[in-house]
Length: 145
Image 1: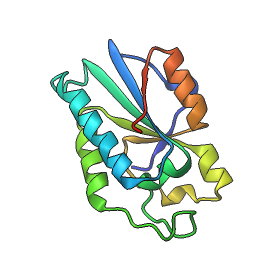
Image 2: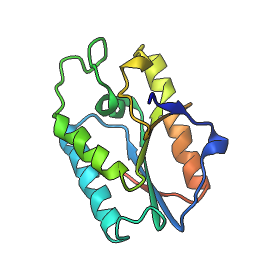
Image 3: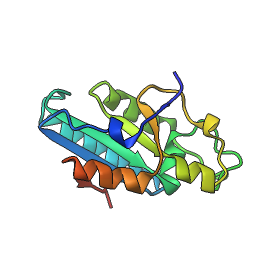
Image 4: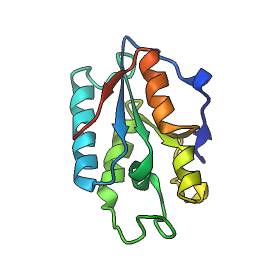
């Protein structure tokens, strides 16, 4: 299924513990470390999506990890190990979602149809505004650096 679009009113904190991981970077090793951290985070809650909710908010160079096709993007010369996305997909079995910034697509002139077609991917109007919105609703903030 193609990614849906979320409004701020759709963003809810339904678990006692909820966290957003901020991904505005294009470094693949850093992205891989973020996935490791998310896995570790989930493990202490026994991978139970009723105990913890984790969301990745991606904008800027961070969206490249969610694209099927990097041609005609600022990252056209990059290559991404497909294992990274497989690792992400494994985490989504425990409720992890990724929210992708529409402003990044518009400003970088990236066709949104280049996005991978998975139901755990959602478009949001703005990545940075979504970070603030989730924090205002009680989500903790983490950034791997």
